[in-house]
Length: 185
Image (cartoon, rainbow, N blue to C red):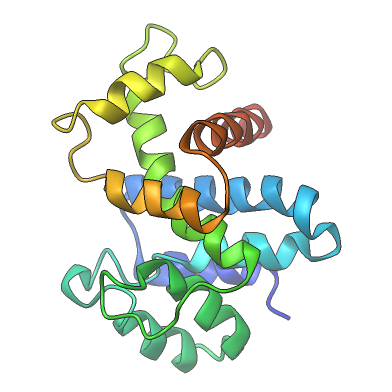
């Protein structure tokens, strides 16, 4: 098993931009939150997957989730982590890994969603998720020009994969991001 500290070191070897590091930390924390509900004995595994999911994005955006396979295998990352981390690119980036496990489906759904929620939070006077409401995110979700790089289709497909509603996914992810933000302070 790879530790979270080891995963972070691997991630930072290939990523230096503060935005990418914050995104990896956020997704890692959000997956940790969801793990507590779905797979508590494997929380660190979920967090490791979240930390490594975009390992190739900063240096190889055109080969995202494909170059990551090569990077993670070269770093000696176990295949279970490689496939889980890169499954979030299924159907979009050429990733050969389809999300099957609940954690992979959650990663698929929340990767884009966390970006949308943070962008919405930064528009608030508090610049925080601590006072973020579902209605605020839904309003931004409908505005295709807002955080245009965050795919609404992927978020909606992720909610469908999980067998829930978009509102449930957004609200639970807000709760997760609040926990991440509280733990970061």
